[in-house]
Every structure is written in structure tokens, then in C-alpha cells.
Length: 215
View 1 (tube, rainbow, N blue to C red):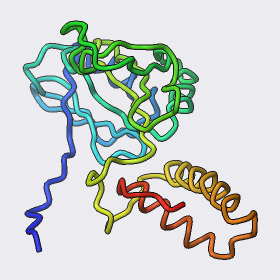
View 2: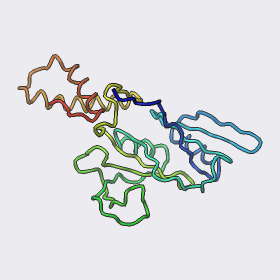
View 3: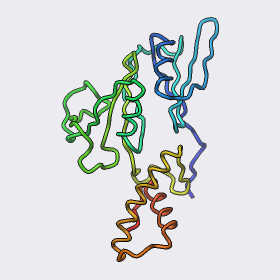
View 4: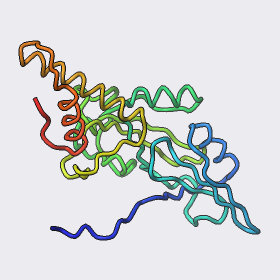
């Protein structure tokens, strides 16, 4: 048996800002949870957590020496990028159109966090996992990216520890399993499948773990 080592949970990303109160107002407007707002003689620390996330952001006064706006390529993983985008727009946030990559054509260092790929407007043509994006920035220019992931690459998730961080994420997985099961029933002659709960469970677990899906 391989020794997995000590658990090390990645929990905090520091976001450099110039105006602490303005940043607090912005991140609150996203609907993120305010976890802390601590102040001392010469410091202030504010922590927010996105819905369903195990990782939080902190910013404040004397928190980091990095230049405000220098944090780029901060990924927010969503199972429905259109719904995520519409929610933030409804909250008054300026979000880019959904885009995907034309390929691995390198265009320069302007957006290295996008791997230099050419942006093409719209969803990935086949709605493939990992392929569709949208972007937005906070008032200092720190750059955030939505990335739509519906199926994890093999090895990315522990198959023995399937978890969902929100009811929305689980519901999206159930909808995908439902659509796949509909195709499964067509292939088996259109008969009602009494074992559909087992099929759903197998599909959802294997999808999250990046394993071969049931037919």
C-alpha cells in the first residue's frame, strides 16, 4: 500500500488590494461568505470563501508585499459556466463572454495563465469538460476565471472518497447521470431500469474520479 503522507489542505490564497473596504464590498457582492475581519494597530485581515469552496481568499492591510492587482489566473471551478456567469452578472459584476481555446497556438506572454492559447467566443463546441471559460476582475484588476468541469481527469479525485461541496453541484451531477441513463435505456430496448439508483451512483462516482463511465 502506498503511503499517502500527511494531509495538507490548501486553504488560503492571498489577494493583493489597494483599498481594503472597496475590496470587501466587491467580494461580498459576489455572494461569498465573510469569515473574518480582524484589525490591529497596523494590520487588517479579511477572509472570504466562495460558495462550495474548501479554499478561501484573504486580503487587507500589511497582508502581502505583492502589488495590488498582481494576482492572476485565480480559477473558480463550476459545473455550469452559463449559470455561474448569469449569477454574477445579476449581482452587478462585469463578466466576459464565455470562451474556449482554438488550440495550443502561442500568442505571447500577455495572459500566461491561459497558456497562451487563442480565445474563441462561445462554449466549447462539444461542451467538453475543462474547455469552457469566462473571466472577471476585482476593482484592483486581480484576475479570476470560471472554468467548467463536469468530469475529472483520471487520478484527479480519490475514487474512494467521492464528495460534493454543495447541493447545486450534486444536482448538476444527477442531471448529467439522468441524461446518460436515458441513453442507456435506449440501448437496452427502452425498458424501465429498476436498478437505476445503482446505475446513477456508479456513473456519478466514476465521472468524478475520471474513470470509464458505464454504458
